[in-house]
Image 1 (spheres, rainbow, N blue to C red):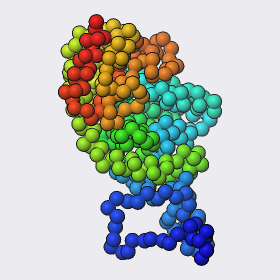
Image 2 (image 1 turned 180 degrees about the vertical axis):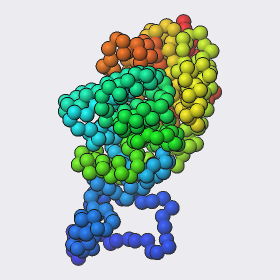
Image 3 (image 1 turned 60 degrees about the horizontal axis):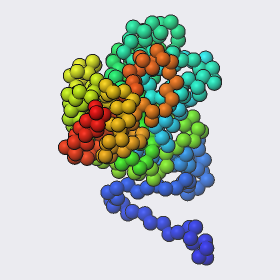
Image 4 (image 1 turned 60 degrees about the vertical axis):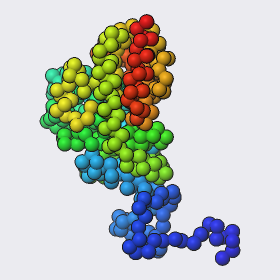
Length: 390
């Protein structure tokens, strides 16, 4: 074999029987092949297992899908290139012209955009309610046929808690599928509830390091099988190397999540006692209006602490600029602590009444708690609160 041929057909190295890699290799390849045309044709007909093209499936991404499905307590999973990609592809795969979607004012802004603007172009209608107004949900589901009920809990950024049991019961009775963005709560929570489809941004707690993006859709096998072809055709596939990094991050998922929750609880208590703070939105506090519901539904209360400063926007700007250990940037769930203000959250496309209902004020601050020493975080936040109160 000539050398210019050999570099494109290098010697194969295969592990002998009984010899296994402790960490699975990255299958950083677009294409797979079978030994014969007959085997290839059998695969394409669905007559034999295997891999053919990474846009459809890949051993590295498949390992991640199987792990995430097990963590969430479901049969199957599809991974995507981003969390918003997971939301968009789910909405496109599950709806058609004439369908109706029920969502909530507390819903993540890009999700609302996808429902209102993208799906709206294709003749899909929506209704937006408050996540706590179960009576309105029941009336809406009784008034019109609804394809999807899409919600999150805790909500972003005010950490309101959805009554998952009630929402899923109402949706099931009306023949609607429930889609839950479970990113804030994590993979180890809410799996016992009758949710049809869980969505996660893998960019957050799964990765943990803030250096890779991804999304996941987790559901029973029947639903995922019906969505898989659409997902492959839409092309928002997760790269195998990104899947490997997320798999590596998941090894420390529980240790990170629980440590971040512990620090978040301490910071919430500090905020709750400070005169510069009008209200703290943290479901782990007894003062949270839905604390009992959160305690019933959740094992951990999360690493997101939101609060309203009494001094409004000016106080929020002083607070954010005084912090030293919190990065002024989007996202959450990573090892470093982060802070965002209303001006950083982007256009929410809400009416004045909906904005008021959402609970977001000019002085709302959202903190994502990382893995720094909690004493350092407490000291940093205390300094910033004093500056905001001045």
